[in-house]
Amino acid sequence: MDFLRPASWEEALAAKAEHPTAVPIAGGTDVMVEINFDHRRPEYLLDLNRIGELNEWEVGERTVRLGASVPYTQIMENLRAELPGLALASHTVASPQIRNRGGVGGNLGTASPAGDAHPALLAAGCEVEVESVRGRRMIPIDDFYTGVKRNAMAPDELIRSVHLPKADGPQQFSKVGTRNAMVIAVCAFGIALHPETRTVRTGIGSAAPTPVRAKEAEAFLTAALEEGGFWDSGSPIPPSVAKQFAQLAAGACNPIDDVRGSAAYRRHAVGIMARRTLGWTWESYRGNAHGSKGGAQCA
Image (cartoon, rainbow, N blue to C red; front, side, top):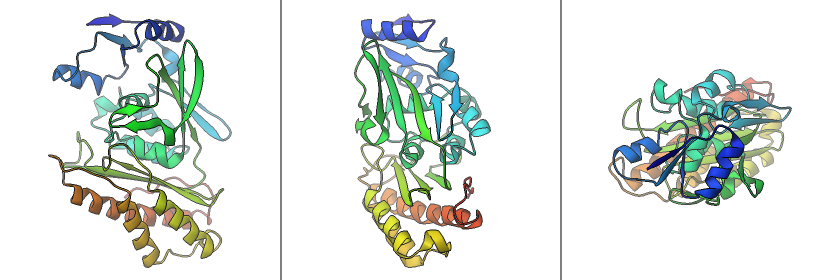
């Protein structure tokens, strides 16, 4: 196994073009586990740690450009107001040591349905910036996941950054695991209220072959909030609406039975998380002047 160590982004793109099967490594929190357990033995590893721009972020007027290697710790400490859902998800990633090394780019590159960042990225409605020597393109997050641990990137492309809209309303993230730390999600759920467009987006992790949105649940809740005048009144959401939202969210799952949990348990847990996170985000919305920008409320 050869180790490629480019000193610049341009050198990294050239190396990836010459060796399309090279596996990028930055935090290494997924790749090294697979190598150590001999689940993967790539011919080349492409070390991106010398490329400083991948560890940088930029807060614009309406969006945040997040470098692929920005550690979860930095998201938690510096971007909680702009990206509350992703900051909450970052808190659940493994241990402090891994949060200091791992980043969103690794989750996207691996495309595991259990990656902690995916539900928050789906709920936020981000775009993934990828690049090769042929040029740069933006992939909407809804089009990024193509199968179990597969994504829409070409073999010669690398993830440069993620572009996320700044939160215009409350966001939440919830995760079920077999213990409180250093755990792969049995299932996870993210939700984001978007008062500016009066819409709701969700993200589900580890309950389908890929990370998915609960689109029927989103459409139902968006219609219910609009028809009931809830965005304007800030009134509590009726239990019947929350229950239907939870049932539709559970119905969006297509889980499997494995050592971490059964398919039936995952569906049930996603429904519970959907109802609870909806309650938390709506209470936060009501408490922030009926739609002013608000951060996430922790469980």
